[in-house]
Amino acid sequence: MPRALTIEDDTVTAGEIVAELTRRGLAVDWTTNGRDGYERARDGAYDVITLDRMLPELDGLSVVTRLRESGVQTPVLMISALSDVDERVRGLRAGGDDYLTKPFSPDEMAARVEVLLRRPGGGPRETALRVADLEIDLIARVARRGGVELELLPTEFRLLEFLVRQSGQILTRTMIFEAVWGYHFDPGTNVIEVHIGRLRRKIDTPGSVALIRTVRGSGYVLEAH
Image 1 (cartoon, rainbow, N blue to C red):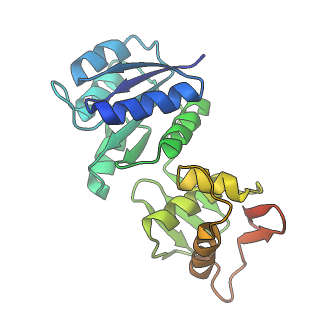
Image 2: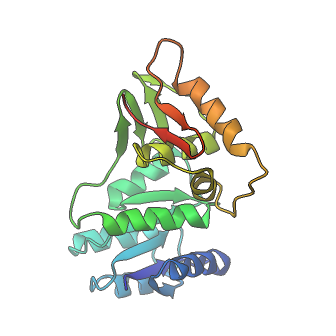
C-alpha cells in the first residue's frame, strides 16, 4: 500500500485530501505544520507528499527546499491558493514535482498524485505535454498550437490537459466528466459536448489537422494523425 503524507493546516482541505487518497488505496498521514511535516518526510519513508504552500512554523517552499537539500526525492504535489505563474515557477524550482491551485477537484488532486506515484524516482520533472504541434506548458498553464497561444478558460485548459495526458486513448463521457469536473456524472447533461465543441473551435482551426475525434457510441480521443 503506497504511503502518503499530507502537510496541510486547513482541516477542511486536509479532510478532503485524506478521504480521497484513502479511497484510492493509499495509507495517509496528516500533519498541520511545516516543521513537523519536514521532520516526518525527511526519512524518505513516504511514496508521495501533498504540501500546502502557506503553513505555520515552516512554509511549503522551505519544506520542499530542505527536503531536496537533504537528498529526499519523494515526489511532492504542492497545493496553494497562490495561482499566479511566478508562484508556480517558484514552487517547481524549489523542488516541487507538480503544483495544484485551490480550490481544486479531489479527483484531479488524486489523479496528479497517481501520476507522481508512477513516475520513476529521481527523474526529470515533467514541465510540458506535446501531441503533434500542440504543446501544453504545465508551469505557465498555457497551451499553444503551431506556436500560437490558445485563449482557454480554466475548465477548457483542464479538459485539454486531460485529453493530452490520455492521448490515443478513447475516453468516455463519464471518464472525462469525473476527471475534469470532479463529481458524479449526470448522463442528462450536455456540458461535455459544449466544452469539447468550444475546445475544437480553438485548437482544430480551419486548415489544421484535427486532433480531437469523436468515437461514435464511445466518447472522444485526442491523437496525432
